[in-house]
Image 1: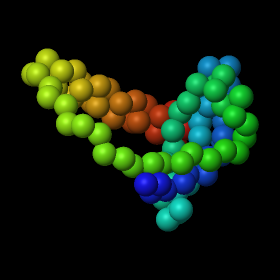
Image 2: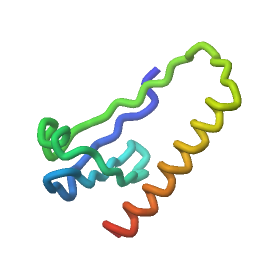
Image 3: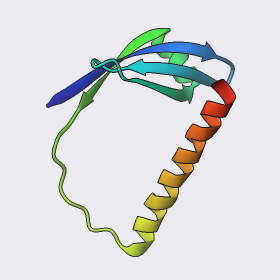
Image 4: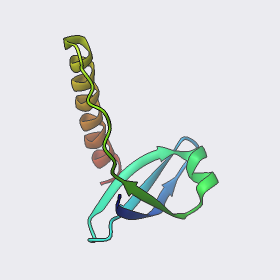
Length: 87
């Protein structure tokens, strides 16, 4: 089931990364950083379709859960860096 379609616009592009604004149908905006080489292939404007489907449940051991938690913490701190870098 398709739950949303985001319209993306590249706001800033340098040799390594691109700063992109994604706008959902309801107007919510998300600012994200993507690799520059990917965005050069896609172009200045693009769309992303968000689809939801059920997946089988996974059993995670304590090590796997800890690794996921650490990755989420890392991503959240990267969001702070993006905000500091681009406002």
